[in-house]
Amino acid sequence: METTYILAYGDTYRDLYRPALIIAACFAFTASVFSILLIFQHLRSYNNPAEQKWVVAVLLMVPIYATESILALWNPRLSMACDILRNCYEAFALYSFGSYLIACLGGERRVIELLEDESEKLLSKSLLDGAEDKPKSEHRTLRNFFLQPCVLGKDLLTIEKFGLVQYMILKTVCAFLVLILELFGVYGDGEFKWYYGYPYIAVVLNFSQMWALYCLVQFYNVTHERLKPIKPLAKFISFKAIVFATWWQGVGIALLCSIEILPKEEKFQTGLQDFLISIEMAVAAVAHVFVFSAQPYQLLPVSEYGKVTTQEKLTLVEGNKERPTILEKTETEIEAPGTSVKESIQDIVVEGGQHVVKDVVLTINQAMEPVEKGVTKIQETFQHISVSSEKEKEELKVKVEERDDEEEREVKVEEHVERTVIGG
Image (cartoon, rainbow, N blue to C red; front, side):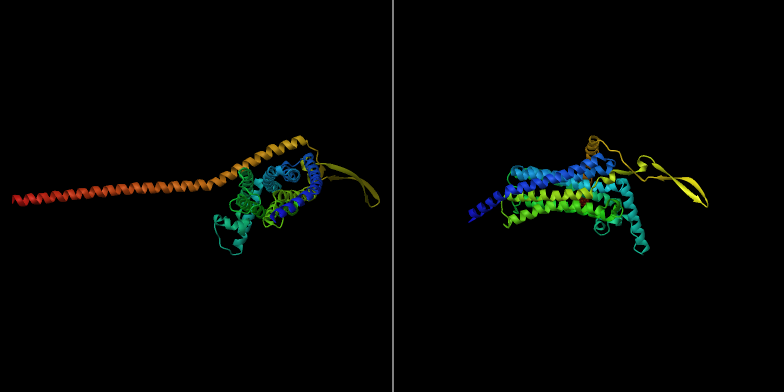
């Protein structure tokens, strides 16, 4: 019975493989073409590096996903390597999207000022409403991150960055851990069994991803009014849909295969995931053309290049007389000059790389700070115990010496009494 089941599904996979590969290749090619053209437009109009370096990083997610998916579908042996690269870039893309929002707000220093202003406004409003006046340190607690993120001020930016970077680090570490477990045959992709590594890694990554996205949502909730000019909701939904679709889709397929609703065959499971991602990336690429358009960066305010003034000759009629006059009009926007693609890529790689390294180091230091405090506290406790023990030993020694001296005095007194009695 089981052999017939395996053969039947093996025939299904073999029958579906070729048409699925052709369809997926068409969608992957379409997705790559749309995304590469859009990226090229940004590189040619690279007039706002602070924002566009992160836009390009987010847009690269589509061609990378599409290429890796079609390669894994074409050759299942490459599936593990493609999956690792895809997971690593997904984490980096999420970090890039968060950095893009910060850049759109004017950079980290400007964001800190905005968050502090929002915090002061909310606290002032609470006082006017008759709320209890609490120290600012009491408002900046983890509980308020869930209930009132506005009151956290600059701490909200720290939490948001920590949430994104921890996911980037964990996702990368787990990707290589999967490779090691697979080499030893104990990973069990899609197997929800306690002696395989898959369920444990799935739980860790799920929690890490949910926390990162929640931090991003809370940051967006506080700053969405300031982000209105870039229409953040459409960008947020389009990006979040890709991250959630790929992750939960993979977990859902694995679950359906484990309960035998879908064929319980590794090639079918990974092939279905890659096929669906290829189609989804084509949809995402089309959406990105409208959501992350390069057009806003092709027209810049005249303050970037000086004032541009045009003159128009008009004739004014005053009574029976006509008087010529000149009307001056200042343009508010001009077409920005194109930039070198090579220089744009160099700035993205160098500046973007330095920014990532700086944030990763900062996050690791923040994560190590509580550990260092804990270790210091443990050392102080042991030192206190050691000092107390030595002090107790000294006190005990003094007591013993005092007792010995007292006993010695008593013996001397007794001897003196005896001599006195005998002598008398």
